[in-house]
Length: 479
Image (cartoon, rainbow, N blue to C red):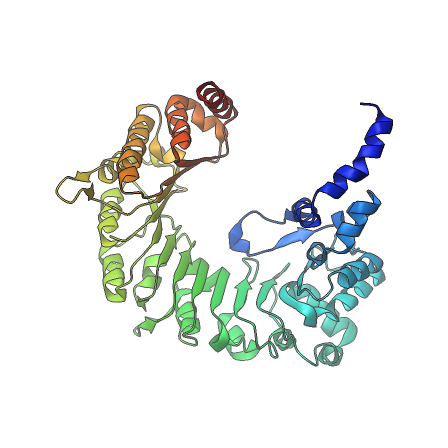
């Protein structure tokens, strides 16, 4: 077809696609993740793509201009020479076209320097904080502007009516510093604030945070502390609020003093422990009857089965998801704990950072795991361990190489065939940091992939190219 005919057809083809579909496509294309790790709790960062979409053609301009969801995520980044990623004019465009949608604002920096133009951008952004339901702010930058350039009285004027729409607050720091009390104005008048995230860059003295900054712990339902915190300080925080539903702890350290009091969290449902050490010392004094999700990405070395069993028995909780890191020195103990979770539907097994092959210990966890998960109770007509398991996620490297993968594939296939009779959906995800690891047993991985035709949800991350090509070829031949 000639270019002239394509030019004639283009407007008509554009108009045949509903505007809401174009808006959804634009939203996907105009967003990118600042960091794929969900523990950072950051939204997608919108760059200038919405502006560029408006320059393609009149149809796209009309659609993009009238799509406020393209404009309500605003990210201002101050680079190392002090310049802003957005000009004031572009920022005004985002703020105007966002309409009445709540803003999602990220203010970040990599430099203590701030140009006059960047200061004007930040001033405009701060004056629109009241419209935001999500704010991620670099506290060193904010304190520098407030204390050195404006003074706290100007912040009082800007935030005189508080932040009535704010629901999520993320605090980050580019350098070690003690937060000033002026920062507390971000949440003093925020009646809807329910979620606070302390980024791993924060180096707070936690007693100062609790006593001076006066974070409204009583109204929070989600608290994510990715920064380093002592076990005692964490217990102190938990003793201040009972409404917590969701919590992540990123880095635990032992502190002086002995904890003697129990912490009862009646509403806590999701607990993520990504600290490498001291997890057992933390949960020893917890009671969480509503807990359904427990994710423990520790080093695996300080495991104490008696303490863990006591925690589960004391809490009397019914877990649905369990994530655990396993070493060959404690694989049997951790497999035994699976019997504590008869209602578990989802299991994640993490690989320890410790190189097990260099320690001289046996590399047998994959064998025990597969053997236990494959046991079938004929009298009950269900699997002996985790009979309601619907999803398992495991690092491929845990399985070892070669024949061990065959055992895993046999177990997955057997559970899949048996659970199809009871109409239980199954989902098996195999993860690895390196796609080349799949070359050791591609046939077994392909055997699992082929089960997708029967409805089994199998994902590889990353996807090995050769396995993908062969799987598509088999699917075409069979289809």
